[in-house]
Length: 61
Image (cartoon, rainbow, N blue to C red; front, side, top):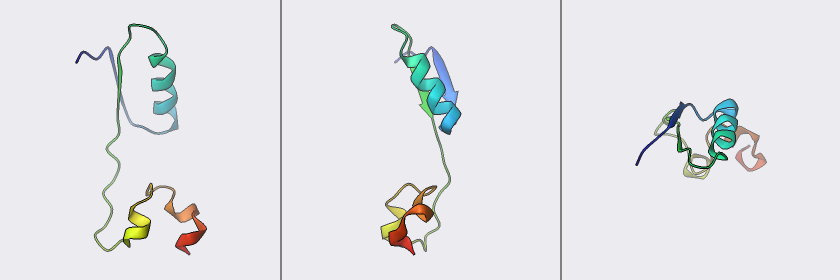
């Protein structure tokens, strides 16, 4: 697969850039996000959600 634009980082700016650029016909955009690994002692009910937002979920209190 050919990639015209490679964006490293899936934060808010990276996602917006990828979305806008991918609207152009014939342009292939690849968005790469590595993120951080969860620690092995994280409960499965929290680990199953996006780790950056788990603290906002009231069920995790």
